[in-house]
Image (cartoon, rainbow, N blue to C red; front, side):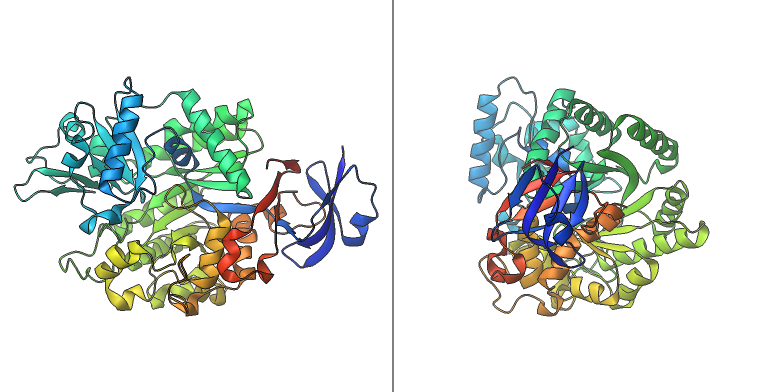
Length: 528
């Protein structure tokens, strides 16, 4: 067992010190005690800062890794550029029956409504299906619609909308679960080796960003073997907890399946892998008009969105999985979705014996003022994706016109919840948005776009201090992960570390994302 000494500025999460020593994956000394040890390796931190490694409280590593293998549509700025890339990829992969890609920008056309014929111009003889970067919408070509049997006579499913032309025919844009699944259920599954490679790609991305723990917030049964095999092969370069998605149509049958899968992962997944969480979608997304709102949308006075579960059904299911010993993790965007999620968690806490449940509500985009104090009272972790708290085109073109100025002004109440005493964690929702914690931290601190607008910040009362943002991406996520030995750097704690090129607390807030990650250590082993 070798001893590594880190010499320089160390932010432990409970204070600062000037040295830290690691042996056998654990912190063995701090400060003067660390400097007094005989070290086998010395890392001089220079002008940088060592701190607990970042965690990601809500992400989709397998989806992010798989995007690497399809057409690269993310970040393209026009429909023409996307179609060109799809055509290029299809030509280079003539044996692929389906062309599948993800993370196109839904703000490129009015209301996010994309036409199948735009993709037909690039590929007409094979099905094409692309996910929007929110993963709640798909855009497909005519052949994909044909294979899925979607015609003018196809009714909208219970949970989903088929966007239509004036004559009733399907335009090519499908929104939410059951509508998207009309096409996605026809896409062939990927081979196990490719799924393992996708996790390898994700692991490299996470390590370079200073991340060592990730909550995979959407796991289907067929994804579990990929994680277990990646762990078996040594291809998993990060700690991961899997959250099984509860289906409102069959959650009762899923209870036994999830208990068995949890036990299987515990037995076969090794020290990096766990599966102790169940994920629920309370609603959709504001930009698609499917987030559940207490009052109607401004651009659709007939609609309050699309709740995925009736409130009583969500409460019953959350109570059942809580009784099975699962942490619950609920996607809730709209104020009605958040209220329903809080009600369900409160029902479970009232019905079941007390235990260390650490429930999570993810995204928390709009919260009714009457519900803010309930997070702290119920011990609910508010998991924010801080990069979203900026006045970008998603806000100006889609979200704000749909909810109006009063509700728009209540979005992402980070500071309000921190000040209330609620536990707060940060995540990325990668590949929905960047997995880089320092980018999210910059937005959390400034509430400005990377270009600097607005100059005083958007809803500036919700800005966090740098220390608060660092805590949310380190100790806050560790609390969510039940990893109390990683909340701060202390003797006996796990040596999950990140070495930054500068101390974020003294850098111009508009340059936080420019700080480099110089090193990442997972249980004392350097991964970057």
